[in-house]
Length: 148
Image (cartoon, rainbow, N blue to C red):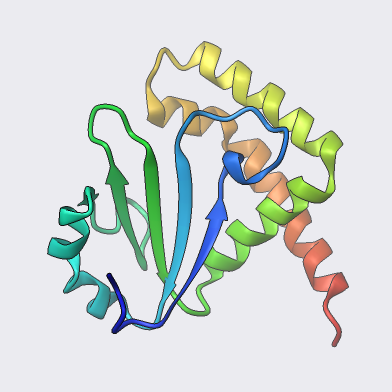
């Protein structure tokens, strides 16, 4: 479908962390050589059921949703080398490696769901402090693991 754009595909989000409670929505991170080239494929992605939403609040991202009323997938696209990709993958890997932190995140998510009144923006805000704190720890841990 995107054969003219070299890509890497990553499974991110809660469904990418074994044992972590998650909404039944799969988050996919797509690394592309050019967002401009990806934009030319919006019609192709629409035909595959994905609705383009542009940057959707994050500069340098292209965001797509599959399933308008009953969402099944979120597709987040960034150019290769994006810091957003680095932080998403670091956070995912951190939760995979630290089951105690993943369990704490699950508790935070459940509390956020309980207090958000089904407002997705509010739900995200309620999780934000935890995510930012642990993304920073994940990035620090990742930098210590890399040879250098």
